[in-house]
Image (cartoon, rainbow, N blue to C red; front, side, top):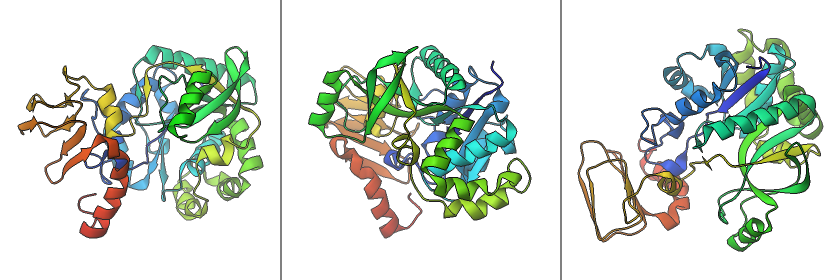
Length: 359
């Protein structure tokens, strides 16, 4: 394995669209959503052990999840866990990671990826990453893996790429955030667009140059602590400085501004597992499209439902179509799949009316 290859796994989100299974105190990356016997973050970390040694894997998370990270990934050392004291979106956490790694290894070549995605074809995924890391090691490039779209999905961002390519790497012409259905259909038909998977590759030196040029307001705040990274003073500096950084995504702060952005069109069985419906799409189903995590779900005259039950509970579902039912003992969710994007807003109302106990 290349000793200069590093991976940063972003694991600080709450996963509110997966409520009530995903809660503030145990979000979805720490759940065995797929019923494999491993949490999503464990599956993600296992995947990257095929790319770099375990000491080169870093976890970026909220401070409140540090103990959960150590519980799920006991081989990860304290210095490999970057604890954010506030939720400032992805750009500040990527800048923090880059500065910390630059202090460890100026030649670091970095993959940044979410902790809660599904990758069905792991061999193809690792090969795409190796191809990308080889390219970024030799070029001043900000690279993203783009997913060849299979349908006009309005829940994903899109990447328009140039037909010209070098070793399978294409220049990115523009990003488009979550288009309407007709626009998405046009994108898919054109063959010139990819889904934005949020998986990035870059040399740390190239990334820091991009921050200096395109987001100096983030770089200047966090680079002021260069002398503290990888020392026992790092967390104290981060606790003070990090909350003062702007809250902005890496897409808006860097990728949509830079002129050296590239993509590799990829197919490796990817899903961002962002919602219950996306889990339903990836799950085994009966002849009527119903999926459940339990053999104790009995369906009659029902189709296309997503059911999640405690192990000791029997559920009888009759005459229901296209619904999400999630029973977490203290919370029962019954929600139409067509309106699942409203679940995130519902959790806000619940917090307002019932306090934080149920969120």
